Amino acid sequence: MTAPVSGPDRRERLKALREAALHRPVLARHLSDGFNGRWSRRQWVQASLFATMGMLVLAIVPGFGTSNAKPVHAARQSLALALPPLPLSRAQGHSGDSWQLVRVDRGQTLGSVFAKMDIPAATLQQVLDQPGARQALTKMKPGTELGFDMPVNGELRSFRYDRDEDHRVEISFAGGKAFQKVVERPSVTRTVVLSGKVGSSLFRSARKVGLTPANINTLTDDIFKYDIDFNEDVGANDRFSVVVEQIWREGELVRTGPVLAATFTSGGKLHTGFRFQRDGKAEYFTGDGRPLKKSFIRMPIPYARLSSGFGARRHPVLGRMRMHKGVDYAAGTGTPIMAAGDARVKSAGWMGGYGNAVVLDHGRGYTTLYGHMSRIAKIRAGQRIGQGTVIGYVGSTGMSTGPHLHYEFRINGVHRNPLSVTMPPPEPLSGAALAQFRSQTGVALARIRQVENVIYADAAPGPSPLSRALAPKKKSKA
Ligand SMILES: [Zn+2]
Image (cartoon, rainbow, N blue to C red; front, side):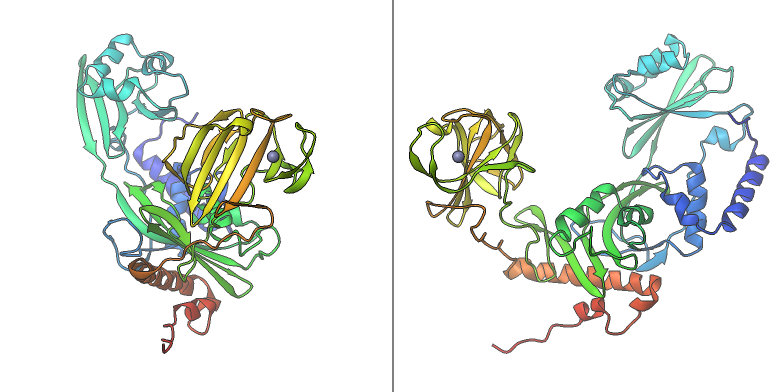
């Protein structure tokens, strides 16, 4: 443990850190290694240097996305990250001062945390007597952060917790009394462009510029899944630019929202994807407004083994030749079964030889059936569900010899082979939605280009794939 550090000493140390960091060749590494979304003080020091060196370029994109956040800065800027403010007691340099942050573990209560810190029960009672404290502190989620200002060998001076995202409560103790102060911590939403080159690992580079693992999954599994093979096609010089919303509070990044727009330039070819709300549901679309999601997934259970194909076969239970009107996937009892496409639940219940079965109506004449389930998930007839929703679990109910999923795909009532039938293309955007979509994507692409122009020499004005994408479309004569 380090000894208590007084103000001037601390400044000296910070200065030394700055000096050392400035002469270190690869600053970015330190920011990426072990970055878990929460920044230590050391990382903050590096981050602020990093920003002033112009390597971390963020841009504000006003008016893009679904949020109504007001842009807080000019169109493009590099962002200098300030050190988070020190608590008052610390800034004033009390001797022996030490704020300790404690993260609540699963099953821990405020009482057990206080006991572990050796704080008397009377103090705990004083905390709980403060207005609002009992509600906020008796049901704490694991990971909740509590702050204790407790000098070595001394009594608790202050205790603090976050009542919610925008309010921090600080309770101070003096002369046997407790005083509560609620500090508002307003957050700011910024829409930013995060851009980087793939380098040795897309994941690492993307984390380094500030994308979350969920953002990266969206890029690889939702947006560019069908266009780019991330195991084979991607080179170190390929680059990505992603528009996201970041929620900041007191110079600290609190949360990063979903990917709003993304470009991936691979081998000189530009790929794009955009998030857009259609019928109140967010989906990803190509630049010309076609959904990136396929209307049906081929297999309602991932990684299952096809145990019986479509067509004539000897029936395993009845023993005579009979048409098999679906396909069977062998999988363990209890394996979740997903809806193959967005649908309305047509029926969910017992269906004779099918056992526990679910029938989904996908519209446009498409229906799917899932049989022999051990158990049906919490769905009911008439309910609307999204592609991938778990509708039940593999079993062997009805006329079945072992746990498997019997899956049928029908078009206008006619059974088709789900493994070979041409799936219908998903419905593209049209009309007013398409017009709104185009105006949003135009803004996003322009901002991405601005950022790329700053970061990459080869993205400078000229016939780059991105500027071609931005060029006004020639109006075709009807
Ligand atoms: Zn079957």
